[in-house]
Image (cartoon, rainbow, N blue to C red):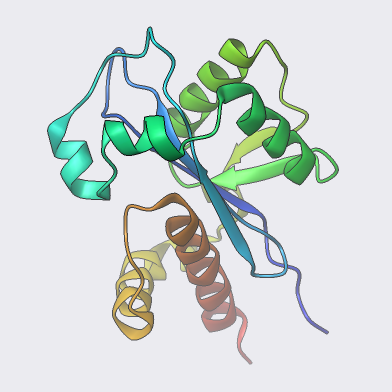
Length: 168
């Protein structure tokens, strides 16, 4: 029997703290596929942390050029996640805040709930999490700090820690 993977969501942002906003959202679907899109910043979204830009390698100019409008991103998320009812995040506090900001400015309500990934993890999985994640980054050459890749990394880490803790 193949266990269905949880759907994971990850958001990259313009920085942390007051005034920050989402710049990229990524999803790792239950079948292991991933998708992501850049978000075109609104005129009133002016916070920009050069350190965050260096970390994820996305410039504000690129967001204006390649990003999708907020309302399109909100519709896409509802299309992707609405039938599932929920998705999970490892950084629920930040991601939920940025998700709420996105939907607020789109004038829409999310058709799904964002839950904390830790709710799915046993104590044994939590104990193995960091080392397993780091090993997967090296083994698979995963690019960090891009929303789609980070969501998939979370999903792979979940699957590996589950397998390690439920093996006979």
